[in-house]
Image 1 (tube, rainbow, N blue to C red):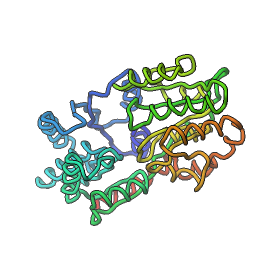
Image 2 (spheres, rainbow, N blue to C red; image 1 turned 30 degrees about the horizontal axis):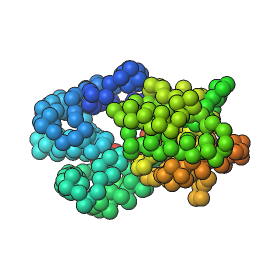
Image 3 (cartoon, rainbow, N blue to C red; image 1 turned 120 degrees about the horizontal axis):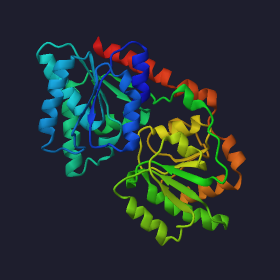
Image 4 (cartoon, rainbow, N blue to C red; image 1 turned 45 degrees about the horizontal axis):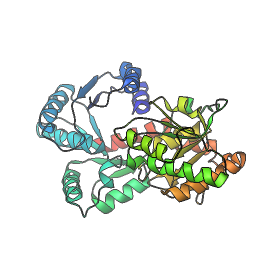
Length: 354
């Protein structure tokens, strides 16, 4: 979002954000401060629950009043809740003859639910209804597009796949620090992101290599205490460190290999950021991640501790050989740059306006 906003502002567009106010640590505040100057339409932070809740009523009312005041040409809703607010109130604005295009990027969240569950049925039902109020769908991977069509439908809604992009500065290599750990996990501490898989895999790789495998885990989340207990129970307290959130490029310097052990993803930025920084990556073959790599890449593995542990073992046996098998930098820059992303999204916006 920050890269896209900067690119859109540089292109002469007026941009604003309406987002939730609950996610607010020192790192998040720093990120918001970095883009505030580019927001001609301002930054508006509201209390928005991730789940369906009674608080959606006042949040919706405040959102609608803001949109009436700002009168944007494009409303781009990110994630299920953002998409619902953008399309609902964008449609209401159109009733009063405001000309606004309603664009939605699912970002995976709602797609992880099972249609056989009551919650899945409810969420998919809402998504299907909102397709009638959508001018264009924007997906971050072809995987996400296929899953959305299969679970929700919306075949009559125009759609575009636009890969996430990283800025030119992020294609500068990150130098690994002296005495760096073997492995880095960076992300939210919740089961969807696979920190438990990562910890078990570190234990397995340690046994296979017959030497301690060191790791750094960077991030935060309500379940962090569970993972700390798991580390202690496996006797890894001396080899696995937990650190608070920090910018990705700072974290990359702390380890030789970046590991992304997610159970589900759409198109994770962390894989693109790591590869752009010339860091070797081991990632689970979920969501859109395989679209980044060549078919059969040794960087890809299954989302279970045994397979991930064996992949770590193989990579650490010959780090130079493993690094040489990462995607070509020129190809990465052509497909996953901020400039490419911003151009393709602007093209999609103009089509939505038509």
